Length: 292
Image (cartoon, rainbow, N blue to C red; front, side, top):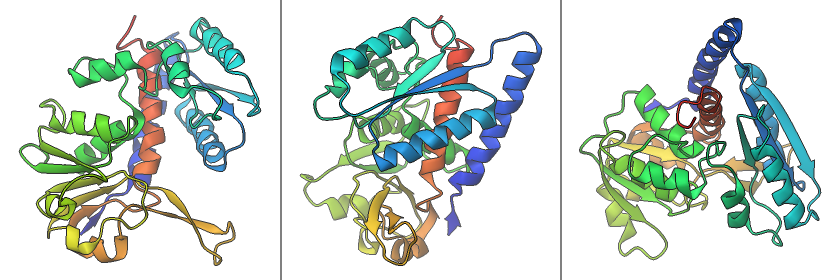
C-alpha cells in the first residue's frame, strides 16, 4: 500500500509555481493577483481562506482578502463581485462558499466574470470542461487529477466509481475521469439512491469518495489493489483534541488501507491539492492562458 502524500506533492508544485512567477516578474511581467471574498465567520471557511492567503505568499502571488459580516445584502455582495470583475489588477477571484441562506449562491457564481473564475464554478467554465475545451477546472477535481498523474496511477481503461454528485466535486470529477485527455476511464456515479452501491464499489479499480459521510466506505466495499481517493473532510467531535474535533474522511482508513494499492489520508491527501490547484488556476489567469 502506497500512501498518497498530497501535502508533499502540493509543496513541490507550489515551489515550481513560485519559480515561474519569479522569472515572469524578473522579465517585467505582472505578479499574479488572487482576491477572495469571505462572508461571515464559518470555521471551515476561515481556515480555508487563511490557507489560501498563505499559499499565495508561497507562490509569489499578490493576494487580497475582502471580508463582510453575514448580514451583507445580496445586492452589496453583487456590487463587490462587479468591482472585482472590472479591476484590471485582479487576475482571478473567489467567493468562499457556503454563503448565508439569504444570498443566492448560484446568482453570485453567475455574476463572476468567467475569465476570472479561478474556482471553475461558472457555467461557462463547467460547460467548456465538459466538452474538453481549455478552461478553469474546479480546484478539487483538478487536484485529484494532479495526484493521480504525479503518482503515475493508471486510469485509462479502468473502472472508476465516483461517490457523490455535487457540482463542486462529484459531477466535474466524473466528467474528467471519462474524458480521453484526462482519465480515459469507465465511470459510474453513485449516490444515496444507487441500487447495490456496494457491488458497484467492489468492481471499481478506482473509488473517489466525495459524499461527506464519515467512514462510509468500508473494507467490504473495496476490492484488493484498488486506488482510493478520499475527498471527505467532516469535523467529528473528539475530546482528546485541543480543538475539540478531528477531521474524518469518507473512508474507514484503518480497515480499508491494507487492501489498497494507493490511498489518500485525511487530512494531508486531497485537501492540500485543492488549494494548490487554485494556485495553478491563478497562475493560468495571470498568464491569460485560457482567455484573453
